Image (cartoon, rainbow, N blue to C red; front, side, top):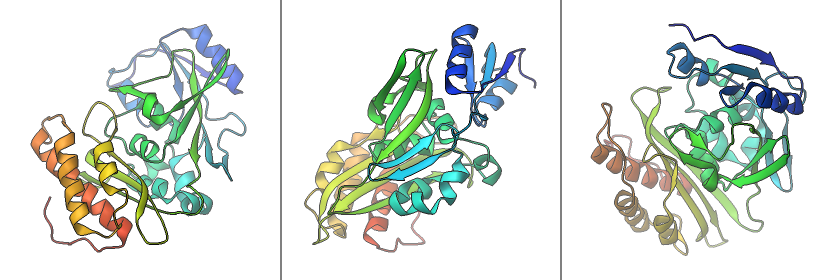
Length: 297
C-alpha cells in the first residue's frame, strides 16, 4: 500500500522543526529514523498531515559521555550507540539491548529518540531507559522540560509529549560511584529481529562483598507500557548477586506481579511464565552464572 497525501518539510534546526510543528498543527509528525512510522503510514494506520524531517539538523547525532552519564541527541541512530566504545563501557545495558533491535539495516536508520517517542510496549529501549533511570529532555517553543522515563510512557504508543513538542535528548545518569554495576538484557521473539513477545532489563549495583545495594528490573511486552517490578527489586537488596534461591524467588514474584495481555502470538499465561524466566536468566547473567542451554521457555 501507499501512504495518504502529506506535506514534507526538512528542518534546519530544532527551533525550525518546532515552528513547523506549530504551523502544521496537531496532525503533523516528526520524522527521525522512520522505521516505525513509515510502515504504519504505508498501511494507512497512521495518516499524518505533514512530516517534519529532523535527520539533518547539525549536531543532533552527538553522543556526550561525561561525569553525569551519557546524553544522546535526537539524531543518534541505534548503530551509532551500539558501536560506541564509550557507551558500551559506561552503560553496557544499552548495547546489550540494541543487539535485539530489528536487523542491521533497521539499526542503521532507526534513532534512539524516534523509537522512544514511538513508545511501542514491545520495544527494547523504553524498558532499558526505565532500568537505567533515564531522563527525557522534551523541547517546545516555550522551552524545555525534563521527564523521568517512569513518567514519560503513558499508554500504548502514548507518551508525555505534547503535539507541539519533540524529544530532543535522552540522558542516562552515571552509575553510583563506589559500587560495581552489572546489567543484562533478555527477550523472546519468534525469530531474531521480530518484535519481542516479552523481555527483561536488569541493572544492579554491588558492594565489595557482591551484595546488591540497588536494583532495577523492568519488563517489556507485559503491559501497555514497560513496567518496573519494584517488589522484585526489593527482594534483591542485601542479597548476594549469585544466590540462586533469591533468583528463583524474584522469578516467582515477577510472575505474580504482572498481568500481560494475550494475542494471536502468545497467551497471557505464557508471557507471564516467560517473563519471570527471563528475569531469572538476566540475574544469572549479572552474576556470571551460565544459563542452562537446553532449558525450555
